Amino acid sequence: MANIMTIVPEKARGIRKLFFGWVRRQYGGIVPGVFQVLAVDLRVARPAGALYDYLHLRKSSSLSRLQREMLATVVNGKVGGAP
Image 1 (tube, rainbow, N blue to C red):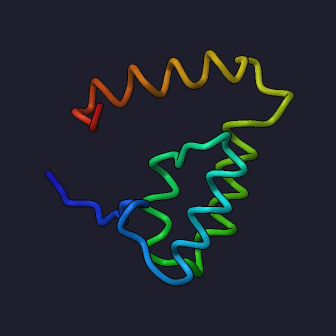
Image 2: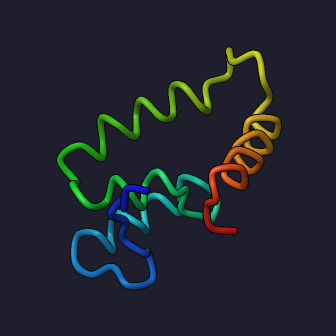
Image 3: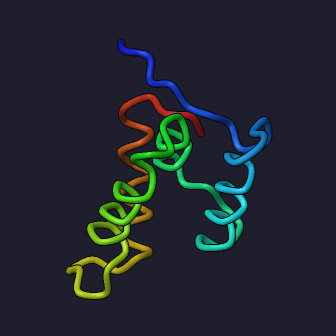
């Protein structure tokens, strides 16, 4: 299985620490895993984050936000993601 680089928010320093602070404020105190991946290369973090927001959090989605989060939890478990 491929290793995907991530940055753990608790170990972030400098600009990445500010980035994670902003993400926590936007997402109610949590840092979604996608942003831990995006923090590796901050040049793509903003546009990719906007795409994530559009696809995952927009109001016109046929699933509620809770349903999308529940689905993400199941998929994460199926692919062997962290608890």
